[in-house]
Length: 313
Image (cartoon, rainbow, N blue to C red; front, side, top):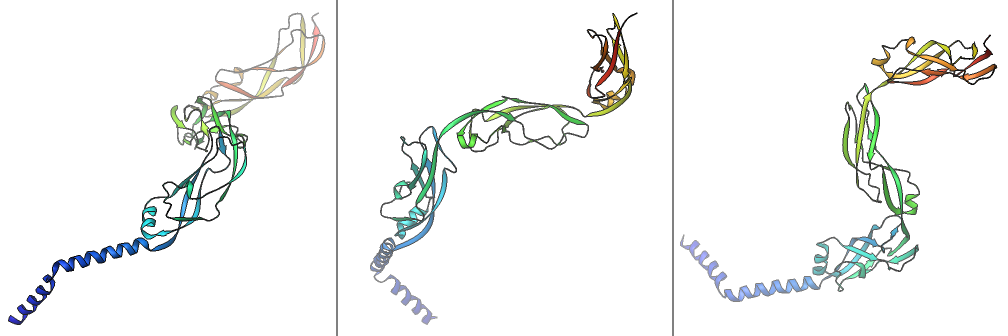
């Protein structure tokens, strides 16, 4: 036990003897290491995010933002500070620039908060640009619907407020546009009217309005039904008489709700030819068809009838 105590006492004396000098030596070694690290020159490969800024009233055809590969040379300490953040660069084009194609060179002057003690090498430093004036165009807005309503319903009317939008962009962009769509509106299984505020689709252009009101009017699904042998009547036969040559009756196709059409028979329709003002002789006249409310006439077969007009005896 006495031997072990002597060993511990020896170690303690060795550590505490000249302690001040030992601490100073440690601090000096740390300082020398820091100086060596700060003076060590290294190279790293990185990327720079470049933004092209044009004068007001002009735009860049294509992308106005891009990424360039670079090599940076400098001390380890300086590079550590630089790489602690994203590297951004801005290229401001001259306010007197005319619409044209041009090349600009990216260098360290364009990089935000660049330390001149660092050396920058840009791979492929030249950027080809095409600058053009900003134009405007007024276009209709179209609701972009996704899905279908419930089985027995249809979209009867779509109202967009406002109905148009003024779009600002390059001529090359606007020339291809005929309308501006909204963001997708899901109508799957819809059974009742719906109103909502929707953003316009983002395509890199500037809009006079960013959001629109879309109103959807839902109605019952329509069906088509055929009715045959509807007799043709002659009307306005006051001073003359007329006889049908061909045909004597017509067939029609009518559209409406199934619940409505189920209660409509042939006698609910009236086919007629108006002979008012016709001279004596043969005429091919358009057949007029009167149908019940809440229905739509889709087709008449045939559309014309041959009649013969004569004077009254």
